[in-house]
Length: 140
Image (cartoon, rainbow, N blue to C red):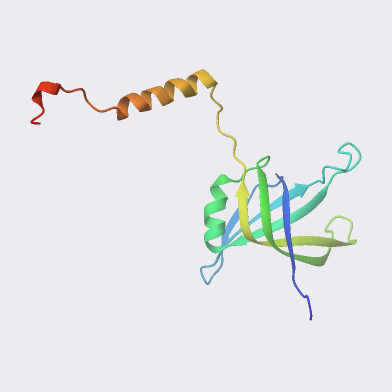
């Protein structure tokens, strides 16, 4: 049995501004960079691993407006390694590209205090309460 494809799931932060491109055939691609670092590594000594993520089609359209540098993401997809030459030093390097099949962002909304949540829940309950009526008006 041959295992030609490697599937991977990473969590990290977006480090490059995403780009959205359209091919001549109408295919949409969103490309951005992600850096992830295992928790067991010392953050001061290690810079983590850099991945280029490419998403296509509906995933690319959906995820593009949500991404900006610094946003934490989880990417699942197929890992491909390629060799390229650095344009500054002309040295061969290995590039890691993930063709995403699923991308999740962790956007943090403004947190409310417990008292604000309680007030809002009470307002919702008050709106849902049934109107008061007179028992004498009932036909039975």
